[in-house]
Length: 235
Ligand SMILES: [Mg+2]
Image (cartoon, rainbow, N blue to C red; front, top):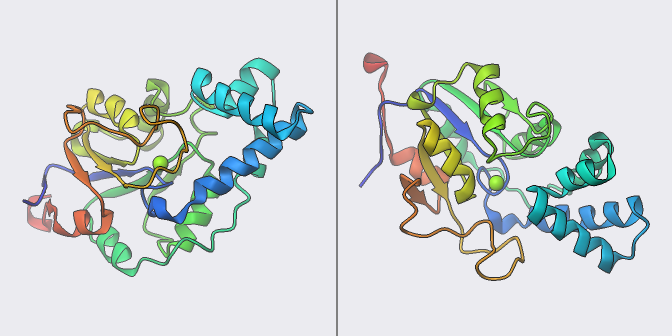
């Protein structure tokens, strides 16, 4: 059955593992670069750096937040370093271009990465020019999704009304906040575990019973193409 999104005229997309498939393994590159940065920044062995990296991720929501809170680190250099990625694995998705360009209303990218990263990835996907704006971690004052403050700043910046908006995400926990604010929520899921966290602690995991997820798909393009959307006459 196709999803009814006829009430939607604002489309909010997470970036990594949502606009491109998790199978691209970009997180593996980010993960390795984070370890290297932490090792260099704190003068630790790679093993100790990795432990600290994962500890901060668990305790502070992101490794970045841990480094900022505990070590008063300037986020700029870290973000530039960890996002300096080889984007070769990202395919140009021509059908996704058609599906996104046909969506009625405004479209945004809402990422816990930087705007520069969003711009590069969107470019590699062949989607340049389709979005009305990017909202990066710098816009959120480095307070990542799923924190409410990140959503509040997004709404203020782009004048978003959650009741007329849908959010696409690969992380169930980020959709909890979105749902509570009134969004329609779509989990773009993959069988691939990109996080390498133990079973039960993987951020991409979800339960069929997660009440804050309205729709579930393993293919964003198919979902967008088949969803019921408002036509020009009903907008
Ligand atoms: Mg993501």
